[in-house]
Amino acid sequence: MTVYAIIGGTGLTQLDGLTIRQSLPMNTPYGTPSGDIQIGDYAGREVMFLARHGHPHRLPPHKVNYRANLWALKQAGAEVILAVNAVGGIHPDMGTGHFCVPHDLVDYTSGREHTFFADDLEQVTHIDFSHPYSEPLRARLIAALAAEGYAFSDFGVYGCTQGPRLETAAEIIRLERDGCDIVGMTGMPEASLARELELEYACLALVVNPAAGKSSAVISMVEIEQALHDGIGKVKAALARVLSAD
Ligand code: HPA
Image (cartoon, rainbow, N blue to C red; front, side, top):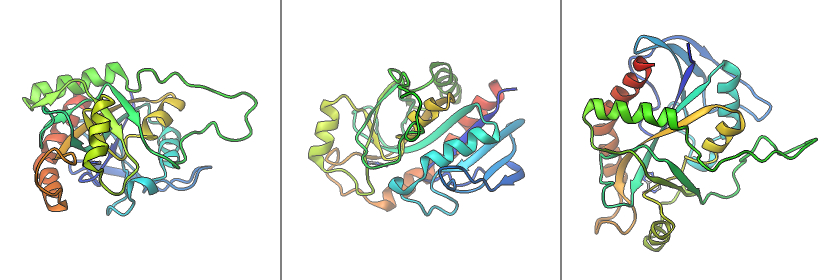
């Protein structure tokens, strides 16, 4: 049976319903991951769970050790990664509470440890990253969202910014011009590191606020937390459906 791992983002630091059988503290050549890898049963099958920001939430997006997280999951036996990300909405369809299963991304991050192919290489390795997300896994996420009857987009470009500050309105206009539909801070280098390790990877993005300049209101943490609170039950239901369908 395929081994699935869920990387939970903001609002998903623990997976209620996961009957934890093992909590693995891991160490990797790249340092320690954001927390223990929890292994247990969810939706009738074995699954791994890792809280991207730690549990409780303590690591901002630029401090997450993405390399250690992906390496540890691979070492623990994960084959498929379902990444959950909270995002801002840029495209008019991407209102608060909307889901997006992005098909592509643009990386605006800087200074993050972003590759396993960094040192002591006999040969430089250039992975193909034309299509950063796994199509079969995207299809499973899309089917799950449709079956649950949630409002979602089955395509979209994820713009990944450095954070932790939110963007300026002008930056969002630039991202929009670049073709981005949603904006977040944690999609990269997670996706490319997964590809380097030959892990199947797709993202389930929940819109938690209109991106900067897309509404007249100031973006507040209260608003974001409310949207997370409202949407996280749906995230869990969609994930359960993906896991039980395979
Ligand atoms: N910008 C970047 N990251 C985010 C946002 C946003 O508006 N909302 C949630 N994560």
